Image (cartoon, rainbow, N blue to C red; front, side, top):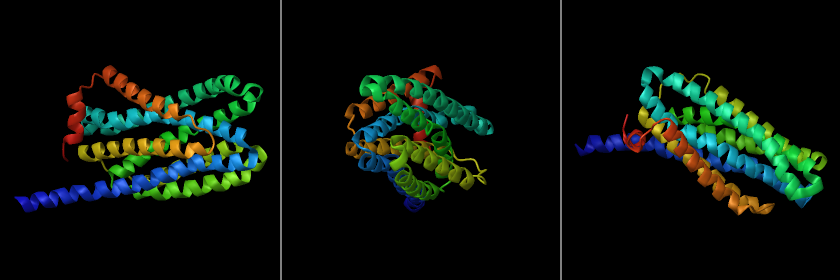
Length: 284
């Protein structure tokens, strides 16, 4: 009995370890794509422009944590409840909901960011508001990134998360070097937006032939990995954020808010803790 059990554990462990490594590399690359432009903005356009881009980046952290945590943790439960026949419909609806929520939050950030900039930066609020408005649009391609990346990880093809992250980081840094001297923080925001859009397009192409249905076990593992990746990115970006501006309280607010948001969704969908935990503890 031990030999078959050991073989089963090894079979399950390999994709988990591989996914953890690729998601980790992708998370590091994503952090580089989002935060390294701040270094170039600060060094070429000044500390205040770097602060503008840093504030916009922190707002984005809060924006993407909400839909990502909700979709990644609750999608397996909803798919399990609906049954395999309706699993595709649940996933498509979740993508639509996440994208719509991202659009609403991005629009709200454009307005709220401008108002916050008036208080924080006084007469220079126009430049900061423009930076926040451009940066907040990154939520939309990130929604596509999150969805297709999760599907690729569930299908044991998570390496796409790593190479697309590295490519997008290089694109982001290159564009920041080119655009920052002329456009300042707004140029850095455009660099991140274009790089994230490129990564979303690459993941969409990589998953274009993906038609297989993931098992409940794969869904649970992929959801956990995505949540861990988001937490890792937030932690890494908070450290690298010190290069320009240090709102340490921002990551705490984002983390607490994301947990509260997920709990509210669970209550609205009437998901019990036992049902939630069962999905992650059940094999294929």
